[in-house]
Length: 178
Image (cartoon, rainbow, N blue to C red):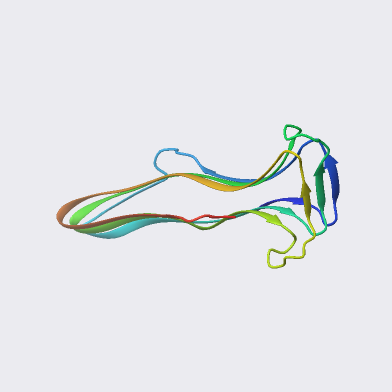
């Protein structure tokens, strides 16, 4: 997890203010990540890859904090608070097998349902009495974003008299951005 925090009762006066939290998860494309083989008169085998990804990226302005810009025109600066998750995941899984009777399988799963990017005003999002001041003549930008570049490739190559092959690729990316 990653957290950028403007502390409890902090007093900031500046020309510009930027607080950002970032999480980068990178699994580069290196070709085939997992490669298996099996053979024999009767073959039953498989290969499986499971990735569970949990990211919490938080930028918070805690209770009682004051963030003020000292400019007087709309062009005199900005307050920018951001939280960003960047997911790059490339995986290739391959399995080869054979025999007179052969049953093989290969699977790859990316579970990225617990990915959170949040900009939070106040120590606890459940309360409304945080007494936080954000003051600017210019722009105040609050951003929470997540991106995902995902490739999952699964292949099986099965040969023999009686064969059964199963290939399964599952990708679940469901970020929460607030």
